[in-house]
Length: 496
Image (cartoon, rainbow, N blue to C red; front, side):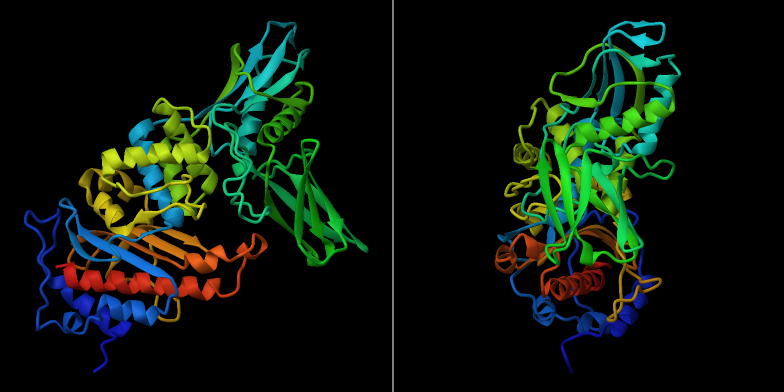
């Protein structure tokens, strides 16, 4: 008989375990995994090496599963292997931010008057002051503009400045990514629409009508600090240059269909937010000069402010949609709150390493950023699984993790799968990770971490190839099938 266990047989075996006692909490004694001869599912379980061999993944695989409370490893592979965590890093960042800032922390964007207001005229400068809110969008800026108009202000006689110095400026989260991808934006203390601008095009006659907008559900203000031209070249599809402080995008005309749009990264976050605020304030009857970036923190009377949702809500969205800019901004904010103004993402990553060692017992991690976009970050699966097994950490992270969909051999979602999984995924080309919690049919919960990476193949890719390299999609699909096979194995073997 083949050592491989079909998914149908495994599901049948898992379902048969539902009659076993349910654990409301971790057992007081250590789990002792023993195969029961009467259980076909357990007798037929493929070994971890069988599953790894079947996945046919080039590179390295590391995984660990641990019991809650004690952190005792039940099964592991590659104990000393540290691999890129990709977006699984965001789970650590979430814990870092919650521990440092608190679940109820709110970020605030303010409008400050640096001078007196006389007869509706500000005799001084007006400042838009970023408070490191990663979720500020055009609708939020519109609310700020409306609140400003309600103060009676009609005109700004001085300058209009925008301050993003609450956090360090970073031109791109990972400079090695293709320049046009919307997930590798600039970082600053002010962030609008996840620091992205919407490029819209529509064929008109023999040409195209294009625009760059700060698009939201209610507003579509035009943007001047990001401009686009169409090129007759076939490749590259996108090209970028900073020309006198303006994001100049060049796009291949041949690559455009009849009409469409996509988000492009913004490299001038302060001026971008300032332009949008100025346009929306003008619509409310408030006149002000063109925005200027300032590096000096403005001081004066607060005329209007906009607060974010609580941090725990922001982090839930970050983990669900894997927003890189959110991870970087909350991670940087946590480092700053701990008493150090980080000079770079790497510096803030080092601070998170220190925290992870002290609070989670993770001693061998390296974080080059907070999002996992940089592929030079490293972590051991066993250390992360043990950390997630700590009940205090589980109480914070489990409620905001997204449910992981179990799929059949054809990739279709399996309805009512007997194993429930709450976890954070992580995907880069030739890098795949998954970490979180599984709940077996018995109700028993386990913490786990799984990483796979073909770092040699990834390192051989050029910057342009990192968008959609050959073979990456199939490699990552096989890695995800391995993750599910391991989860099903552990639920059957240790989940009772």
